[in-house]
Image 1 (cartoon, one colour):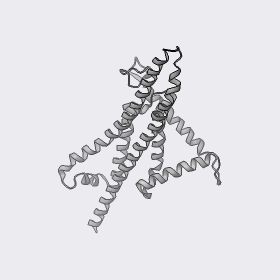
Image 2 (cartoon, rainbow, N blue to C red):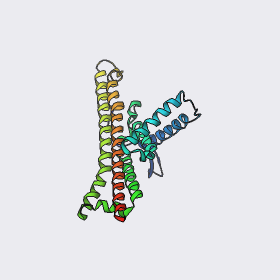
Image 3 (cartoon, helix red, strand yellow):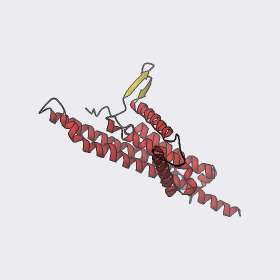
Image 4 (tube, helix red, strand yellow):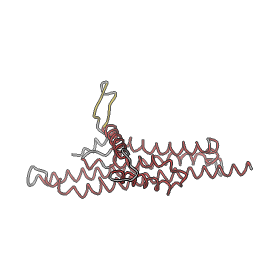
Length: 248
C-alpha cells in the first residue's frame, strides 16, 4: 500500500550507523547502467560484413540515433549521438521500472535533477569550449549588459523545468497506479482474500503509466536536451562568425 508520507526513495543498505547509505534509486540506477553496458557489449560483439540477427537490430538503433541527432543538431554535431542514445535508453529504463512493480527512479527528485543538471553542464561546457568564456559572456550581455541577470536566470530555469517535468509526470503515474491497486485490493476483499482485481484491472494502467508515459517523457526530456544544446551551439557559431568578420 502506498504511504503518502514515504514518497522518497527507500534506504536499501546503510553503513556507519546510518551515516552512509544506498537508496533504491542508487541501486537500481547502477543496475540499469550495468544492464545497458552488458546489452551494448553483446549487441556490438561479433560484427560481420553482412549484418544478421542481433547486428541488424543494433545497426538500426545506432543509425536511428545518429539520424535523430543530425536532424535536430546538424551533421556537424553527430558526435553527440552516443550521449543522446545513452540518455534515451537510461531515462526510459529508469522511468518504466513500474512494469516490474518497482518504484521508477526518475520519481526521485535527486535522479531527475541529476539528469537535468547534466544537460545544463553539457550546454555550458560545449558552448564555452567552442567560443570561449569571453564569447559566451558577451552573448549573455547582449544587447545590453543588464540582460546578464536575466540570462543567468534563464540558464538556471532550464534544469529546474526539465527535472520537475519528468519527476512530476513519472511520480504522478506511480501514485495513480498504486492508489488504483489499493482500491482494487479493498474491492477484492468483499469477495475473497485473494486480491484478484489487482491483476485484472491494473494492466491498462500499466500500459499507460509504466510504458507509454515513460516513453513520452523520455522523448520530451531528450528532445529538449537536444534542442537547447543545438541552440547553444548555434549561438556560439553565430558569435564566432561575427567576430571573424570583425577581425577581417
